[in-house]
Image 1 (cartoon, rainbow, N blue to C red):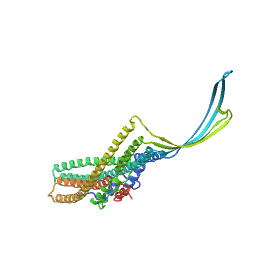
Image 2 (image 1 turned 90 degrees about the vertical axis):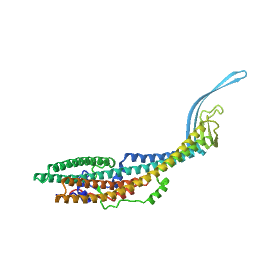
Image 3 (image 1 turned 135 degrees about the horizontal axis):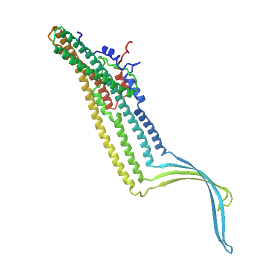
Image 4 (image 1 turned 90 degrees about the horizontal axis):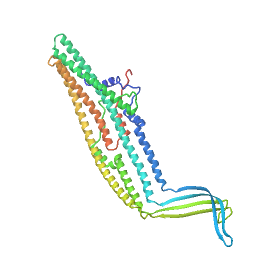
Length: 456
């Protein structure tokens, strides 16, 4: 009888190479993240939103620059002059004529507070979309990391269940052989078969989970045959300290994309208040024009062909007096919206701080569970070996061996899950603090080793 041993990295390499993930080349977590950023439609849409915001900012700047226009016209007129002449009576003179004119007009805003506020809103709008892009990138990186680690975890669980199924099959065969020679009762055979049926159901569920998690990863990366990597038992999992997290908390307003969004939204709302206040203020523009009018048929004042050239320059002042209380109500509206934006910023600050603290506690808990489950793997393995030895010398029965095998396999599965949870909790902590980037993905990706394809 072969003793059951929990799956080690060497066995993982062998079994994983036979799994559905076999590919032509190794694809790491970093490769998965880069592939997702290159193909994700949502991420591409966010990049286009940033590009659109940059053009919107340029539109706001245009309100501060000169506006130059060219005007040209041609028209025909028939003018009739009627005069009362003594001794002659009414005298009418008709003067048909053409008029052709062309000119250039320039307007340069000198004092328009609303235009200046709108330009600054465009700048803040660009900063807002950039913060949204940073948040979307961090969310997408965490999403692909979750999918990648879930796929690896599902494959590891399948490997453990496969090894357990093989061990239970051998134990069931041994029980049947001992029953045939009269060493055990039929109860041992039926217990072994019941355990084998249960493990077979677990194996089918684990196989289905591998297929589902692989499809989820393929959706993000567009990989057709993703190849797994293995997390060695000796890998040093990433760590952080409470002091470092406290420093992150102090830097949240400047570093976290969500808080940057709320701060920018508040700045935009305050600029909207300034635009509303500008409704009470005067506007001053510099206006200049240069044009020429041709009268080839003459005019009533000068009945001969002539040309008029005129150039003007001046300053235009406009002062609003009354607009039906629209300006006052608009100002009250913007003040309320600015107060709302401030409240949302404060609420977001509290929520982000809470999320960071919770993520840190979750990461600490995952680390502690991983350490405890590693000890449980050693204990369950020792217990299984002792039970197998007792079965060989006749002090343990077949059911004891089956139970010990299942316990050892469950401990192995829980330990594997806990290790992946440590990695995921670390990335979640970085994302909660607004610091997740490709360097963090590369750091986690470096912990894995690729699986060599079968036969190589």
